[in-house]
Image (tube, rainbow, N blue to C red):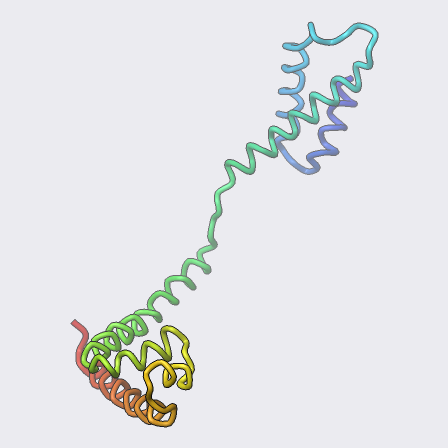
Length: 158
């Protein structure tokens, strides 16, 4: 029976060094549950079922114990990306400071357009302004923000 069990387990875990351990665990369970085997029933089917359960337990253990391991090159790539994002973070912080310098009305136009995604026509309808005047205002506001951010970027970071 051992050769059949070994072949069965190896068929479920091909090229897996743990297969022999599974065979030993299966033998142990067969011994512990020997009183549950019904005389005259199919021993092979019973033993193979227990072996299959032991293999499934191994799969479950492997899933639980599997840890995601990153290659060294991936870690380097992530670190490089983080360094490259630092200037972007600084630019965003400067932009936030520049936004605070705008008037409430200017901030409202920028937020409506870029944060809320409103079209100029939608915002014009809400405020009673014309879409054309909002377009010109937005053009000027962007110019102010661009200049403010550029000036902030030329200053030394703290």
